[in-house]
Image (cartoon, rainbow, N blue to C red; front, side, top):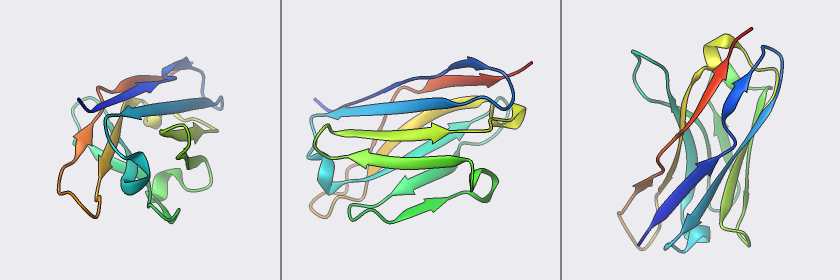
Length: 118
């Protein structure tokens, strides 16, 4: 059974930081591209950042210079370090695994809420 379990969300003030974690089980983690998406109330889910099997990284423009995605294949975990948080970063953040060479399967986590408010 595949599970992606996010943690680390919460309520913070503008300018503060949070670190999200996503622990994967049931997949060969190193074979997957890992990504963080977010969905704000009333908006479509959007890609925030992704990291390839080889470590190549992409960010949505709105988080460049503030967010950092990383992965630890030994721990089957992907992280999202979020600094200088803004109210517009408020959303539910989802972990997503996809793009394995040997499989077309993709998997979502259950999401962790992030609220940035003073």
